Image: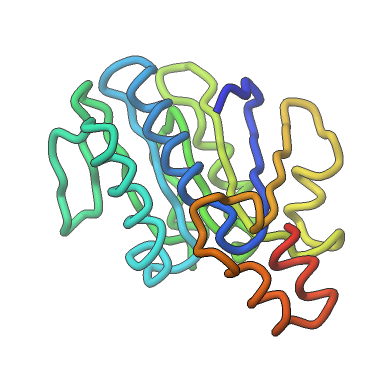
Length: 193
């Protein structure tokens, strides 16, 4: 949450808390920045947005008591400082063109096309100021675009990692029971992050 990198990736195992951190990060940046700014939450599909990312955002917004209005038909939040958060799917990356943003969160970025990332980062320019992007994802290997962007020490980029076992709020024994069901390499990806 304290990172000043323009492009931040948070990769981790299933249940490591990636969506919680992504939602909290987006809300804190929207609340602490200038007023009346525009932010966006993007998920790979509408179903993932509705069932996971939106819920994570609303849970953190309720904890922080920062929402002034919720427009369910547009999946848009208006915060107490006048800033707005648009919530959209990126199943068609070209739909991300248009808005000038102060910040964006790509939830489950490894399930998006690289084109989605490229389009969104070019939107981080509201009112002549550089915006910031956070991407949360389960890793998909060194041949995936998320590794190229976040895992190779590019300028203005920072990567954070967490294992499933790092989340103290999971049920006791959860990680171990899932690990016993996964093949070794799948467990490295899905649990070790």
